Image (cartoon, rainbow, N blue to C red):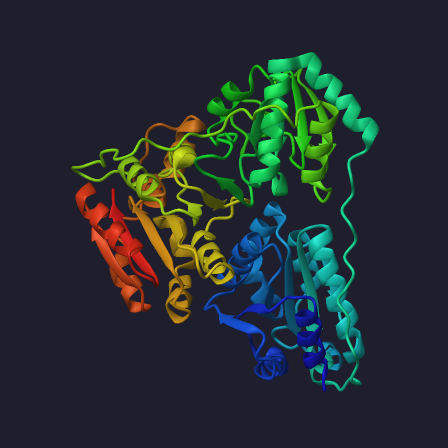
Length: 518
């Protein structure tokens, strides 16, 4: 038995049985060990950003971490953008980064780099393995940290620690610290403040607070006090649809966000942060609440968020109160759009035909801005989205969600510009025969950047600016790209064509891509 075997065994004893990988030479002993562990599902990504994005999507839906396997510092550097997104989503993840043998580092070989320095900005926990016998403890610590933080952990595996011998041992699951409960005195204080501020108070929630049960409890609190409830602008996962809380999120456009929050005098944070603008804009505030708004924290990230909401409901005697903001089902037999296709029609068709218990992976950026609100009344589903703003996560998120939930239809709402960052993920969808429908908003431009230019006061675009913002010379051919990677695809230019393709994709298993030319 070698260190790589111990690594796999430690992952498996803790229930980590999926590894998204893009290995290199330093990781060959880990790859060989994976061959000896049929319990471990290995999923190859053709780019490291696909690997970490898929691990993010998997953990959001499985509620446990996946492992990733990355090649040295440069390979991990390719993965950093989606590690950043996972960190912002507070997604549990265990990255295993191979490195040169300990005695080879002194030679400064071409792939030698400061892996720790690269990893720390995108990780909550970083640990270098010191010896073959250190492999098990290091992976156990990473597993516990990934769940108790929760967040991204990175373990550096020198090649000689992977191939070196270890003594056989009986392994036990790693103990994960229990989450911190809400302080009763703090709960009483916040309950009193909610009673005082009534309709000018709001709960701002994220994380596990956005599951069906905690959201319903929060809606009971709102019904009892008159307060409102919001989700952060970006969240890891929200359980949504008819019969559940119609939770508004803080919108991306700064003026809309300021309007939404202008009458909030008390903001209670439940795992969330004070809402801020995505960027700074001339003449606009950074914080999206007014200066006189009081901010109180009920629970911090990593605390027991559902438990904190339950404690607050008990203090307010709200459990018996009917919840506010429950979404009614959409009207039956609503007419679908017709005519020339645009982004709003795509969103309307998808939200109308959304299957029960499906998973939405949303990286539609500006094209799908109305989609979230439309789905309040759709059949019940899970909604996962780009969190950290580093584009190129939509296609990988769908991979991970489909691996975690093979019995559920996954629908990717994908902008074309950001989709090109990790288009290689379509190949993984095909290889694994994942049940994913990818909808490409093919506007052949970075539409969001047109808006950002105007937001900073630039309204006239010259030739150079236009060339930086448009994707039309040459136009991307998503149908051809998808088919080249083994994914069936079709193109729609009218609402009728899109409806036909979307219904067809929903009726079958396996990956399918629709290029919606808008």
